[in-house]
Length: 540
View (cartoon, rainbow, N blue to C red):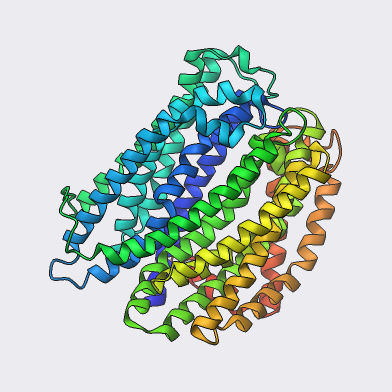
C-alpha cells in the first residue's frame, strides 16, 4: 500500500511538472521570439540578469531548504503540537534572512552583473537594468520554497509542482504584450542601445510578476489543509541548532556551486554574438531539465518524506531499499530520455531558435553535451537526498567541492583551447564529465557510510535499459536523417511546426520500440510502471 501511495503521489507530481514544464517551454519559445537566442546580445543580457535571482536564492536558502526543511519538520512532528511551533519559528527566521538578502542583492545589482557577466562589457548596462527588476524575485522564490516544502512534509505534494504553471502563464502574457507593443526580434538583431526603460520594465517585470503569483498562490493551499502561519520571533529553545548545523554545510556547498556558476557564465559570455552563449546555455539546460524534473524530482519528492522518517528512526535498510527502488525506476526512464534528447536535439533546438541552420546547430550541440550526463545527474540527485535523510549535509559538501574543482579546471581548459563557436559545447561537456565523477565519489562515500548500498541492482537495470535502446536509437537517427534534421533546409529544421511534428514522430517510434524491447527483456521496472496504467485503462 505504501508503494502504491508513493506511485500515485509520483504520478500526480509528474503531471503537474509536465504541465508546468510545457508552459515553461512555451514561455521560452515566446521569449526567443521576442529577443532571440544564439548570437543575441539582448537575450544574453536578459539571461544573465534573470538568472541571478535563482542563483542567489540558491546561495542564500534554496538548497538549505530542500536539504533541511523536510527532514527537520519530520523530526519535529513527534512534538506535542505536531511541529507547529517549530514550523512558525523556522519560517519566520528564514523569511527574515531571505528578505534581508533580497534588499542587499537588489542594491548591489551593478556589482552582481559585473561579477557574473563582466567578461562582455557590451551587455553589462542592459543586464544591470534588467537585474533591478529581476532581483526582487529572490524573496518570492524563498516564499514559494518555504510554503511548498512544508506542504511536502505534510504529504500534500501537488501544489508545489502545479503552481509554477501560473508563473509561466503570467510571464507568457507579459512577453506577448512586449512583442506586440515593442516588436518581436527572433533573430536577436536588437542591440543593447535600442532598449528603453519601458521595454526593460515590461520584459523583466513580467518575469518577476510570474514568480510573485507562483509564491502567493500557495497560501490558499495552506488554508485548505488547515495550516496557519503566525510570525514567531522567539527562536531560542525550539531546536533550531540542528537545522543550523545542517544549513551551514549546505550553504557552503551552494557557495561552491555558485563559484562554478560564475566561472560558467563568465567563460560562456565571452562568446556572446560569436556563437552559442548564455541564452543558448539556458535554453539547452531548460530542455535537459525537463525529464529530470518530470521524472526524478517527482519520484524523489514522493519518497523523501518517508526516507527522512527511516533516517530519523535508524531504519537504514529501508532507507536503502527506497533509494535503490527509486534509482532503478529513474535509470530505466531517464536512459530513454537521454538518448531521445540526443537523437532529436536538432529539431528540438529549431523549436526555440530561428534563423539559419548554423544557429540551430549551435544550440543543438549544447543540448547533446548536456544530455549525455542526464542519467548520472538524476541518480546523483537521489543519492544527495539519501544523505539529507540521514541528517548529513557535510558529506555532500565534500563531493560537491570535488565536482566544482573538476568543472572549473575543464571549463578554463575549454576557454583556452576551443574556438568561440564551440565554447558553450565545451562548457556543457565539462558539466557532464564533472557530474559523472561527482556521482562516483558520492557512491563511494555512501557505501562507506552504510555498507552495501545495492548499486549492482541499479547497474543491471541501467544495462538492460541501454541494451533495449540500441534499436530505438538507430531507428530514431535514421528517421531524423530521412526528415532532413541534420542539414540546412531539411523538413525537420525548416520551421517550428515541422520541428515539432518531426519530434513527435521520432519520439513516438522510439518510445514504442523501447517499450517493446523492455517487455522482451522482461524488465521488472517497466512492468511495475505499466501494470497500474493498464489496470486503470481496463477499468475505464
